[in-house]
Image (cartoon, rainbow, N blue to C red; front, top):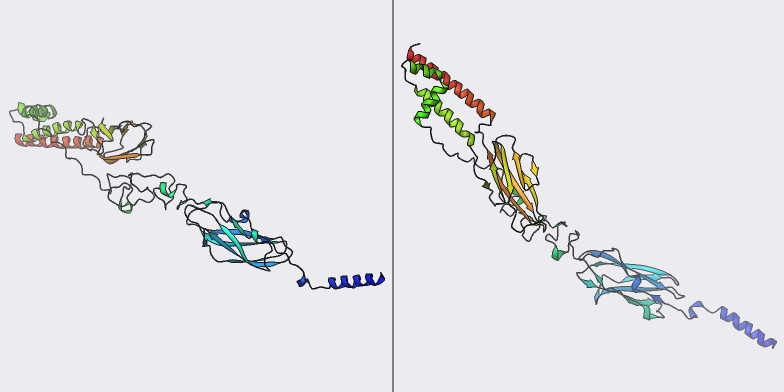
Length: 372
């Protein structure tokens, strides 16, 4: 019995001294679909992101291996080396160009050294991911975006073509590019040259009798000359005619309402510098917004507006009509506020000076003829 005990003790000592390399090794490298993740939360098509994965080793022996990433059967980048301690883990990553549409990621552990004891968990496949096709990241998808490469969430499109304002080289579609157009938002104008002044309709000259009567009334010196047997002078007739023409200028520019070029509004002169403007909305339109610009710093959002311009000159009056569906109608008209109106104090001053000069000439001629 004592000899048997001695043999057992000697055998146990040899087992304790047995090399560790001769023992049985257990390797368990593993990867799961949940451990595969992206560097970005939102996946945009054609954007480069980084794919991460975590590999664990629940065995009792350290191991090295290679990790391969695939989308369908296409290898993503190159294989990634790992070195995983027993009971630990290791992270690997690879850069990936996101495709359009749906895809999934497959990760595979290969070439474990020492060899993996449980290779069944060496592969993982993620669920399907879907990318967003939005090149300019403005929230409007490419197939619905009228400027897919320019940020324009409002999708503004003044001329209603297939290009939004943010990327349209001719926003108002008047044939002149924006960088050469002084009025890029007005299809009726492209430069700042004022429209030519309209030619006034000539007024008929007063009848000769009316001229003589006006002359007697405004030139008492001529009346005295006539009583003294001297005929009314030609200068007196010219003076009377000038007064008659001046009086006739008080109605210059008035008349029936005038329609704008695109017939989106009409205007009518109320007084010298005062006009009434009336918007003409499209038939069937509802929830319309009006925007007037009178080219003198004044604006309005009313459908009908009476506006007084600060002085005579040429004003580019424009109107934009915005419908509830985003459609915009624009129209503009060059309006001429004439200098020739009796409400213009400068004109009255000129006429007064003219009358004084003519009266003085008349008196001078009459005295010369009487020999004074």
